[in-house]
Image (tube, rainbow, N blue to C red):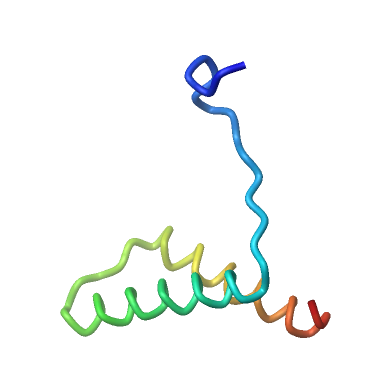
Length: 64
């Protein structure tokens, strides 16, 4: 099946701990820069970054 025939089909993405850390830190910096510029970040983006930070913390605690 092609993706075109199923546009809503989800794809799993597996991240290493380092990938998760880099993505989280990049997005957190982006949000901080927006806030400094007086731009209110999108609340869904803030929620996703929060979830990524918690996932990263759990990965560190488990030693992955």
